[in-house]
Length: 60
Image (cartoon, rainbow, N blue to C red; front, side, top):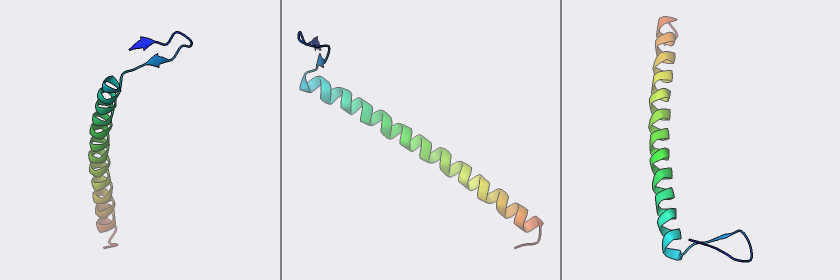
């Protein structure tokens, strides 16, 4: 990485760019998988509680 003399943008080689992009994609994928698992667990719990309340109220 080097500083472009005319302005303040960084000049990054294609290889470095691909490496950084790969790391970012990997982290986003892991975050998405973690979020999906979290949502699935909490959704299952919410439905289980709703079913319990429905059964307790004699609605099912």
